[in-house]
Length: 442
Ligand code: GAP
Image (tube, rainbow, N blue to C red; front, side):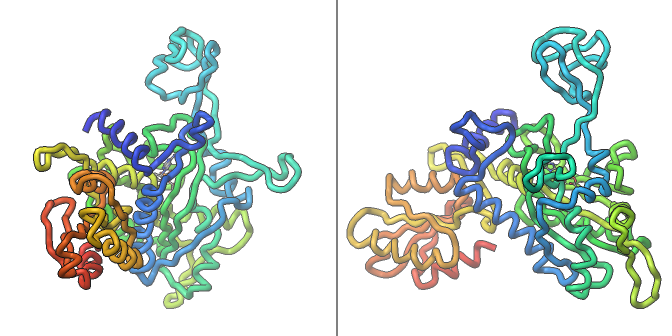
């Protein structure tokens, strides 16, 4: 896929109500996006698939929803206050700010050879300075440094500081995990590519607490499990790969790390990170909070600080991968169609309901069918335009089935169900319609 198809995805998302620019009527807010009626359904379905796979279908993983605002010392302990920075350079002429490793600024920051892409001048870049990516705000009525707090840049820390609470209340023993889905905020300097890198985003993170002796075994286990999850969403396996981090790439907390990468229209990029974080986080929180976070094995009585294997996936990034993977333009019955071949389980709308004509009892029967189906799934009633046009409208938003109510439906109680991908039409009894669709949505 080329850059053009990225433009096509962005324009489809806006036209059909998946994603809008934040604060659009005020000129927009940089790299912040709002999810419209279909986008909120798609993202929710992706989060539900993740939650089911990680929490509900496992006995040894518990859910959590920790607050976005946390004690500021947590970010000192985690290393974010000192280390969560990007080196930046400023152009003295046009005042634009760039990452020091930005390829477009050609030259060494602080030296005369620099060339700035915005104003085109040479020799005007400052030396590199660190810039913290955390959003800062104030808690309480006084805006002073003592009341400074941060919007969390990852959900993981909320899990670490609740690890004992969760373990004790749920009577878990190692190995076990804690999962959460929530917003994170980063004042990214080079955001971009639509919802790929944004300043406000959602993470789906799971932290798995293990005996240090078993870290490699669990790292390898989670690496496989996570890839299986992505292919279970219908993502083309040829567009997925692992990228192991070399020693120079490893984050300060990681002993081993691999990304799951997807081949986006703009190239191979990280979608999910799997890290062996060792005992770094719990040791630091022990040190900074003064609380004991050791684990005592009930069988061997061995005491140790658990190692953590983390899986961290961006919900927005996953949604972009799923959209890019599903997008297709095809010739069907001599006509061009745009279709999102979304896995039925994540499609925002499961069935379109079309009365063939606006008379002979068809609209009334179609409303009855709608009422019955919408107890089990999101559906969309559409009476305007030709059936072909109505199919195209649903194809473009990824609706897997279209149900047409015709004369035979009124006289004999059956409808046609058209499959988005095979285009095959089945005649189905109205009484069996709900279970026919439910069986095909998993
Ligand atoms: N707790 C570990 C952690 O946060 P990360 O590699 O910084 O690790 C994990 O982020 C995942 O979160 C990424 O793989 C990506 O999917 C998502 N993510 C990170 N920064 C993002 C951003 N600015 N916009 C959208 N998603 C982002």
